[in-house]
Length: 394
Figure 1 (cartoon, rainbow, N blue to C red):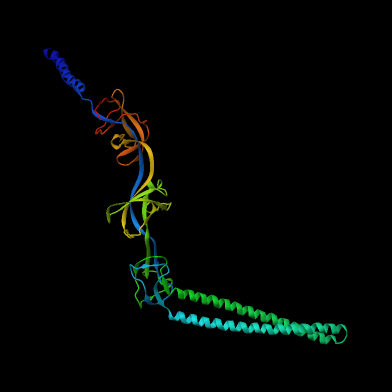
Figure 2: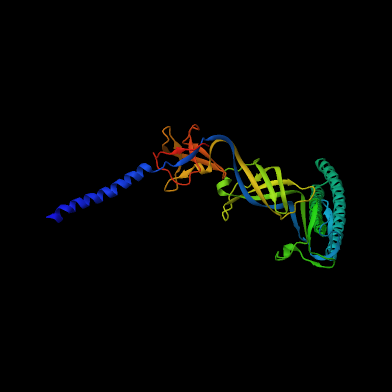
């Protein structure tokens, strides 16, 4: 019986020893110390920082339109050339002979046309004489001075002369058409001979040359197109900087947006006062980027086509309500943005907010806050909704 009486007492004692320390710990727990900040109105910029490539304003690869041998080469790499300046003369002797033959053929056709025109004059004079005779015979026939048979003979000669005139005039027209064809052929040969002189299409710099005097120059239209261009001419006093903009930013960028550029080859130098000059308006299906271009004056030649650079496009500028980045948190799913708002009784309220631009320092608050709240910032751990905290002086 003694053992039965002691067992309940032991269980009660064990319960007391466990319950008392827990309550004491709960009462003695310290409130988390936090600092707060108020949302601020500031000007935000939506920017996109992307790699860029410097391109020539214009770049032309020059090939031969006619086949021949390279004669006089009048330009080399690095030469500054004017529009229309001769770079290469191609020797095409067989084309010159063809041109001379076509000129001779044209002269012969013109001589034949002159002969035919003279024949037309003779036939026309004969026709006029026969017409006068025919008219006279008609008068004589009416007066019975001559027989109808003589009148018919005169009419026959008159009609035959009219037919010869029609044929002669047709031959003159045919000769004129042949001359027109010959002239067009001669013009075509002249144009092809002009192609034997390779000229600069615009003012710029010769950036590549792959021909020497005496080289066999092939007609690019008759080759497989795999050969190098004879010359490459680049316009570099103004350059294009091409920037691929990713899909997430392409919807924001527009013509006229401000741009800042820097180049590893020119450390410490930032090119400002530039804008987006043009944009492609479509995404490349392979890279999902949209190409934009920035025009850069380059009269001093410091920038070189092909240089790598970094471009920051300032796509949007607006007045916004912001919080420091450390004041915005996410729920357990990581999809909902929340802030810890301090209530008047120093308790915490979880407030869901909608965020906008994030520049790494501050985050735009689109909705959820009015701007008068005190929001916990620089808090490493998580605070429970309704939890009481102590506020440190900011």
